[in-house]
Image 1 (cartoon, rainbow, N blue to C red):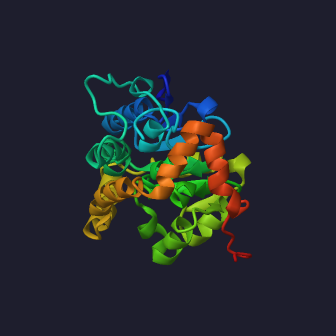
Image 2 (cartoon, rainbow, N blue to C red):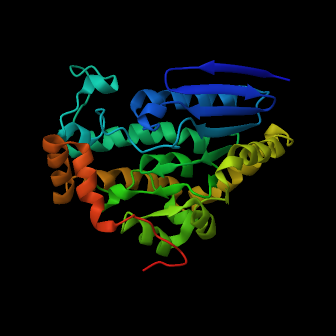
Length: 302
C-alpha cells in the first residue's frame, strides 16, 4: 500500500493507499487560519491533485476544534490590524507589502488572497471531504463549506458569530447549501448550529457521533477512491460548473467586497477599539453575551 507522512509547520500530509489525509495542525491556536497555514494548505491540495495515486482527500484537524476562524492575533485582517497586530506576525515585510487596513481596497485585496487559497479546494479535480469536530466557526466555515462534502460530529458547533459586529463572511457558500431563509437565520444573528442540526438543514452532509467521525469520513473517502480518478473529476466538475452557472464564483468576489464594506461599520470599529484597549477576550465577551449560548435549535428555536 502507498503510505507516507510529511509534516510542515501548520499541517500534516499523509497518504494511505488512494486517500490523502490533510490535517490542520495548530491545535494550540485552535487551528486558526493565518497566511502561512493557507499557503501550506493550497500547496498540499495541489500536490494531492497532482499525484496520480491519490483519488480522494480528507481535510481534518488536530486538537479539540476543527477551526476557530481567522487568526485575529496576526496581521492580515482589518480588525487585527486596528487592534495593533504587526505585519511581521503574519510573515509580511511591512516595507514591501500591504498591511493593516489603510484603504478599503487593501482590505479587499487581502480577503481575496485568503479566498484564492481556500478556493483551491473547490477548483481542484479530486473530491475533498471535510471532517468537522468541535468548533467550526467564522473562517473555519469558509474552509469546510468549500469542500465537496462535510461530515460533522453531532456535537460540533458551526456558525459565523463575527456577523454580529465585524462584517460578513468573506466567502459565501451558505446560500447554495441551506437556502435563503436559513442563511439569513444564521448570518443575521451570528448563531451557531450543532452538527446534528446542520445535517438536518443541509449545511453538512451527515452528522455522526464524535468518536466515529474519522472512521465514517475515511470510509466515505475510500468508497469514492474505488472510482477512476478521471470519472471522479468529471462528476465533481460538472456539479461545480452548475454552481458557477448559478453564480457561486461571482458571489465569492462579491462576498470579499461586502465584508470589506462591513469592516467600516461603527460596530466593527468599536469591536476593534475594545480589542485594542481591553483585549480580544473582552471584545468577544461583549459581542456574544447578549446571545446566551449562541445556538439556533431546530426543535426549540425562538
